[in-house]
Image (tube, rainbow, N blue to C red; front, top):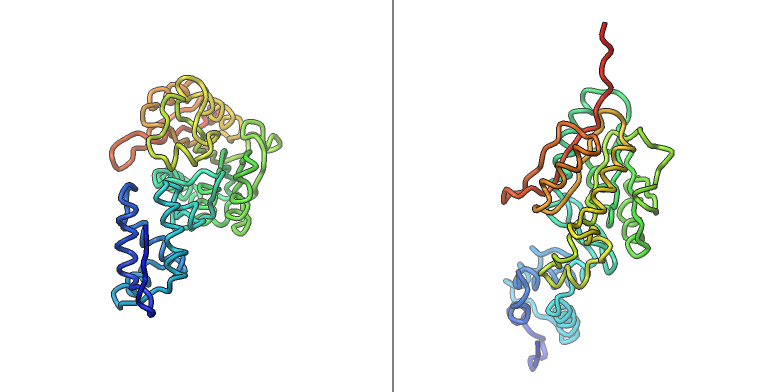
Length: 302
């Protein structure tokens, strides 16, 4: 994107945005991304302030234009918008993200919504503090959203990646989430059998299904994407087994998975021992999460 500013007053913001939109023609939402980058740089992230300034004919200095162009160039090369701005929206929160951490996706909000539907009912009908853990927490998105909605719950989050942990800590420590850096398959042994809910968005993509979007294929960490084995089910299988160990009888398990893995996950949950299992579908009616409960002990017969 080349600029030639002859007017000593600078260049109109509206013109700069139009040119940036053209430069971003190959990304999925060029105008939105152009505005979000400008809002991040110039208006503390406020897109409405940016749009108002453009309508009012505000001008940018050559230095501002040059700095903005540098951000646009990064986005044009398909660096994730969230890496450039350093934040990602998720369930009413703004989370810190960057290179080395998986950028949370909107579909994971459905997992949070399903968990809250179940856990809120339990909060209303039971005494005692709920204990919840998010395995493979990544940026901490699920744990942060749950804690923000259930502030009295005791929420844990487990993440192994050295690259992700700085972002995880930044997102979770202010909320009072207990962050554990370690292997999700072995962490918290002292709390086995005590959790009311285990939630997880583990790596689950089969190795042959490389994401089509360069943002994911080139910038999301492989350890957050690929589940292992030809079908991508190695890590989900291990997570389900560990969740069963961590849960108290009657405890809730929800796991995200690929929409092609519904049947495999249903068989997995039954094999591990979960009951009352069902899928959660997204707005396109695709099964993206599966729910199961650890059985309660049978009541003794009189």
